[in-house]
Length: 323
Ligand SMILES: [Zn+2]
Image 1 (cartoon, protein in one colour):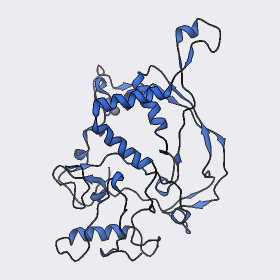
Image 2 (cartoon, protein in one colour; image 1 turned 90 degrees about the vertical axis):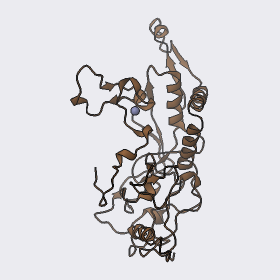
Image 3 (cartoon, protein in one colour; image 1 turned 30 degrees about the horizontal axis):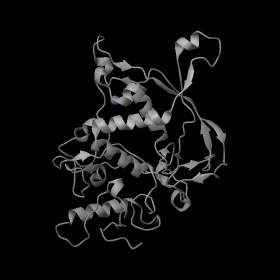
Image 4 (cartoon, protein in one colour; image 1 turned 180 degrees about the vertical axis):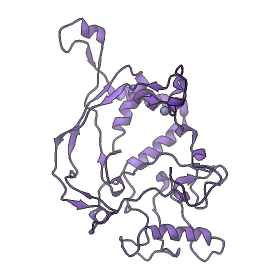
């Protein structure tokens, strides 16, 4: 764990919403641990009579490249930043679940926003992802595939309850126009992947073992029905909370807003003379000077579903970026 330079009374762990806590009880595993498997944290310190692991029931094969649209030339990438836990207006929400530029780890009722997601960016922009100079802070990639490559893989599952299978199918395919993010350089727009399930079959072992026909006991199933039943069951159980999760997912993994996507920075185009950390210095200055009122107000990262205007350009002294 990293130690932020500022000390807060509350630790980050304490601000984690309940649904993101790690599973600790074998009899109360979350759907993901039940399907993909679980190992109890600190299992070595617990008595042998307590169950500390549960085997996953899903196995994914490697993907095989079935169509290639060619490779990108050797490309030096723009610097990929690391999380900055002290940028609290990006990581925290108020008690009411809203963004607030003044929120810190000590704000009463503040909570971490949730899981880290990389927004789907549609098309990449070489002006944003390319860097002219190699340095010890960036990476150069060779043999990266151009958009349009296709891979095929299989997913084996056993003993899944119908709702678990519906959840797995939904998680794989998502919805029309929604994409998974996979691999390196996701903040630069790389790695948007569409997964399509071509067919689903289950096997009836009794029928299979009573016949020498290779296809005996196999039956195709209707994936749409399983997905639909999963969504309907979650709706019944969790109502508007589930709707809110889907709204978030659709905003993050669906079509992006019509704005340039890059790390916050002082200038419209990347300028090595004014690195992006200056934006954060400027926004912090706005927080400090808020009462004085001689600078524009500080900003927080909006919720993805509400973010239509993007963040302003901010210079390191807190003034509006000049573009
Ligand atoms: Zn879990």
